[in-house]
Length: 376
Image (cartoon, rainbow, N blue to C red; front, side, top):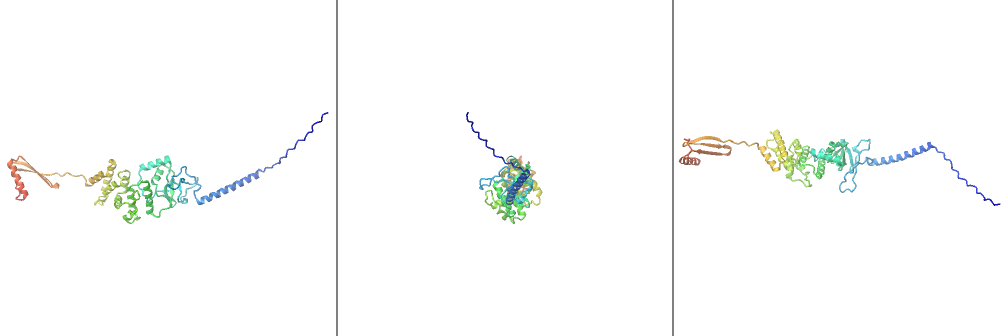
């Protein structure tokens, strides 16, 4: 009888401990942990905004062009977080912000005063297509942002229905004189103001007492390349400043009439000796001349001739004083032109002898030998 194989008893499985899940307690712990994390995040946010008020604001969708020489990275504009009101008083110098247009004012002493509708329309169209890639410069005063430059961009944004304007915040200029000088410097870099702008603004600043004299104002006037204007150029600008603003605005709409030399020629109308007595007539005359220059695109020389002819008025033709005479049976006429100092004598039908006799009489009369008697 064969031996049966021994059978090994099966190993027992380890027992699994039973876990009792308390849902209420777990939910409480999760809520407490989340609250702690949130509080930590808010604490960090408060720390950031205390140093940089708009540090957590949404950046604009486009980068703002970097200032040349300040590194490769371009600054980004900041705007108020959703559901909040933008507060200019929290803006920091050196930062670029998307300022609501309702909080932006143009420069009251800006180097640019006259704006062509065509320029504003062109910039408005560019903003619609490309957004604003070049911020204006401005400072905060009395809860508003006052521009130093960027007047065209402001007008273009308004006409195009844009809600904001990109503005780089800078320190407020010390006074109106410095505000004008900084505006002129920034505008010179963009080459977008004319002699009309300069003449108008500098005249206003003198009238307001910002400059005591024309000589003092002239020291702040520079050419495009930054070099000082000559005394002659300064004097020309001040004469251009005598043109009424209404006519300056009309002149600014055309390249020819906004040119320095042609504007100077037009200003000559307003320094005529009798201007005070005929102010209205001269202004009407200037308006007609401006229209003709713009319509015909006249050159400087043509403008000079036009103004001279208008000031002198139409030339009236002097009619001669005529007298019929007769001599030795022949008839003739004497014509006198007093304004020209001219006398013409004409005789027809004289015999050769009578002609020689009359000639001798005239020569003797002119030499003072005797007076001519009455013609027979």
